[in-house]
Image (tube, rainbow, N blue to C red; front, side):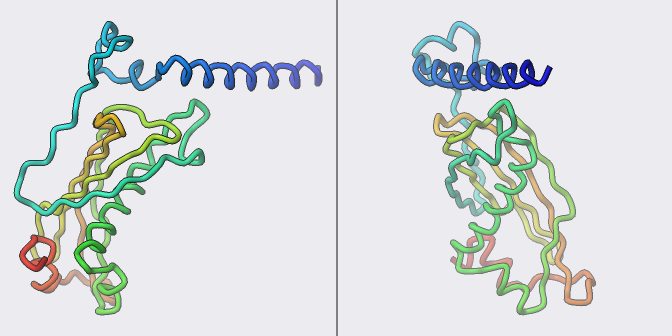
Length: 192
């Protein structure tokens, strides 16, 4: 019985490696299988995949690119859904850094920005070693409320996820406070 389990595990592992090799060698991917926006005939042709619609509003948008790590995937090699929120958080932090503002600066001044609401819409799967670009947009800021939106696209410009977060600003005693105008102006692009 013990030998059967060992043999079974070896067969499954070998099958996975063969599948991975064949998939990469034939340049076929689960992206096409899982992406409902790509029709089956175009999956195996040279027709390009749909491009993401860029954010066209006038709000401030900044991007950064990451490579999907093995630890971010599940047993099927697909990125676990919770990782998108982590990437969105990094996008928010990166937007602030690119503006010359850091969360640590806000906290030193007694302002704490907490997540009050987060939504993610998953559009297509991401896989190990995909290059994901996260575009973060500051949508609005009204005193104590901040809102950001996100679009994550892969190296083929396919939209894999989009989302939104709303944040509240607290002081050190955890009371709601307004973020100073200088930060709101920086986020709206007036201070950059």
